[in-house]
Length: 159
Image (cartoon, rainbow, N blue to C red; front, side, top):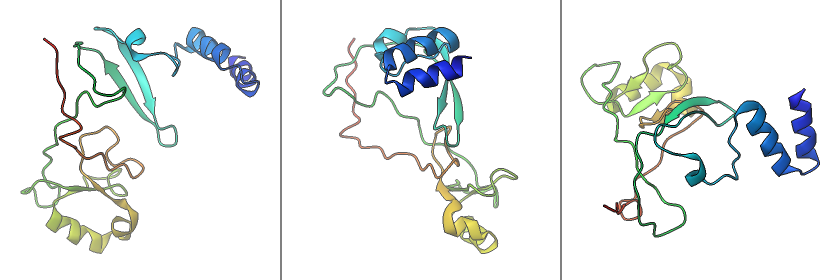
């Protein structure tokens, strides 16, 4: 069975052999592989993020472009903020989601309705209130998204 063989390779510190086995048997791309060797226009792959509370994504490469990188790692793009209407009043933009109630009902709230919701949901004030962010991880395991740093996140695209 591949699981035991893979586990044994890891226990012996044979990372390279483990990566080869996982790629050949499961189609897993080794973490040591450089992105430029993997990604190309038209590629589709499935990605599992955070195995504690897994979010499964399908990544599709729709285009590629060259950039001038100031550092080895930098942000290429960022999702636009979401415009979700409050599920309680139906009037204002929601700014928070209740991670506890979201599994059973719409639970996106504007500031005013979030205060009202916290009166009826102990978990909301304690741990379940999370920011509305444009991410598949929104509402999962305390994920609150990142902040945009306009100076750091500026990108120069080569033509």
